[in-house]
Image (cartoon, rainbow, N blue to C red; front, side, top):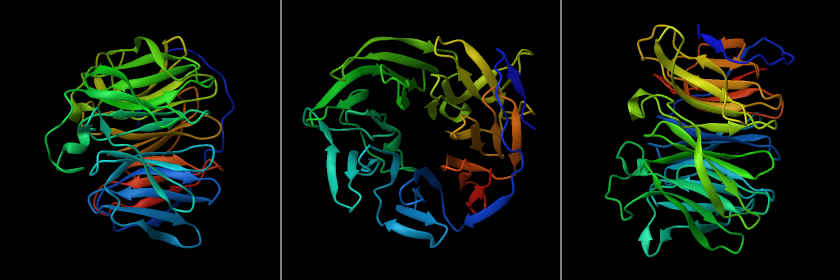
Length: 342
């Protein structure tokens, strides 16, 4: 069972603790990047090694949505329902309209190919921000090749389509998210084991970079790095990573930070302290309950860090639908995709 260490008291109502399990589909190699489409009431996700993006709905089950998919990773929607996809194989950020028309949003910086766009967020004025680490140039999750750029940057595409380099001093950019008022942008620097925060100007430009939270693990990729990140409507930040408890034992954890950077709670994912069980994906439901999946199981916590339920389903990523049900993309022998009811 995961260990929870609360650092600050917060009260909230609990949701239904029952967690019946329904298997949605199976037979994949390595699934990633799930995103729920509220209009279509369906889930999109990618099987990266198979190079296929799938669509799952209760009526049709899992069907191919795009083949090949260019090994897409992070995805998000804008207010018009356009889908933005970070593609590893092409080193491009792509926008797809609801009708399926594809447009290249970004592919090069000053004549050089981007590394491998990884995660993306869209501001309400349609400014697009994305991380560009080198992870997609590894053979396991992309096409092995040398970088053209000499840095792993943070980019912005303004509403007029112009590409701006906002920062080039990261070890590896990764997950990113806005504050509720969109005046702050949080960005992971995975090998440096910290989260940075920027002020967002009215024109979308970033400034005043500073450390928001640090020492989240040791920055080693296979030890568990700061990666998936979300922000709730109160400005609390949720991030996957690696932590040390009050007894000095290391373990993989998801950590919640208040807007001022103070740690509110951490939820230990592994009780054995062997570093064998690693969290991989994180999502918030509409009540700001936190769901975590990884190499061992899927766990749901309330906003205070209290465990609501666990399910024996390992996964690489997940999403919560509008009814707070959780869809987990699989990990392990069968690489199942399952739906965990709230």
